[in-house]
Length: 467
Ligand code: ADP
Ligand code: GLC
Image (cartoon, rainbow, N blue to C red):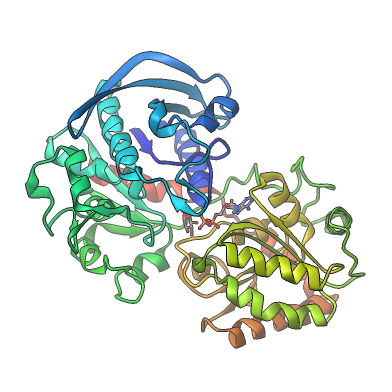
């Protein structure tokens, strides 16, 4: 099959979270299974510096955006995973410091930027030879694609994957003119949403198939509690909705080969993991003796249950444990973590920012990973942690619930509150203190297979049902 993936992130070139990781690894795994797969994303400023071999092609597409007609040159490269990458050039939209916004604010013209992107993707698909059979759109930034394909009756099948229902691309109704679609589509059966325009809603209603990133989340989003206002729209498509658990790039996240960590190790050579802990403690000038080291790598936003971490932290720190945090996001969370580091300078290190290499060193160097997300479509860090023998403590929700087995490959808690989370953390601490049980737990978690190869058949089944 010939599949074109459209998304706003691609690791390592343009990434803010797990979306980029999925777009790097899933297309590569499908390609490994004999399909013809390419990925298209905006030509961000970041790409010029990071995507080797990136060149403009002879191809350009014309896009109507409201009253303007804009031309976009198409650039091309091959990703480090061997997948063809197309990038859509339009500097006034994408030659910027960040992907979506700056200083905690979205860019004012995100509607124009991503409506333009979605239209350019469709135009590109029409110009490719051979033509893709499937356009696989990801998240709201590409969610207009299915609707454009339907409205123009183009010969593509469309799949929409929802990586996070909390981000929907909701814009004032006046931005609808940017789509150049018939007014009929700004109605409740399509893009209209409480008087506004909702791009994700359009994708949900018009894609031939809708997927999300775990079976658990696929069920949850059909309920009012977790449906973020789109449970009604999703209910009408429930026959077309499938939850497929994400996989991981098991080569990139492999403690036996990871070049960024102090000492490589695997399940048979666990003591070498200790060297990574020592190196991490030394790097951050922490001193906790043989006490457990907790790790957090996260966007610091409400979704991630940061307040639970902050409220459980004092108790575990008073017992002598250490805590390393890597993340960025809400200023208030950043400030509270910094305060904690000042209060416990020998035990807590906080690194505000985005640092791919440090993320690997934290996974390798910590004993326990904290991920008490309020909700989690899939989550990837629990997989990375398990692969590195770093026991995850997770909220039993969405993809976290689907991927961690309580007491066997990590610890789970049910109720989203400090008490339940604290109990699970204490269980982890007890286990850590049991020199017999702990390595058994670590070895078992490290032996789990979370590779994308296992998920490929599930995507193939969906594509096959469409073509
Ligand atoms: P989400 O996509 O909701 O942020 P995931 O767990 O699916 O959550 O994916 C997060 C990805 O982003 C992981 O690859 C994680 O390592 C990475 N990540 C998050 N914050 C940082 C950071 N500050 N520095 C480096 N990597 C980060
Ligand atoms: C989103 C979700 C996360 C998921 C990732 C990749 O960012 O928040 O749970 O793992 O997308 O699908």
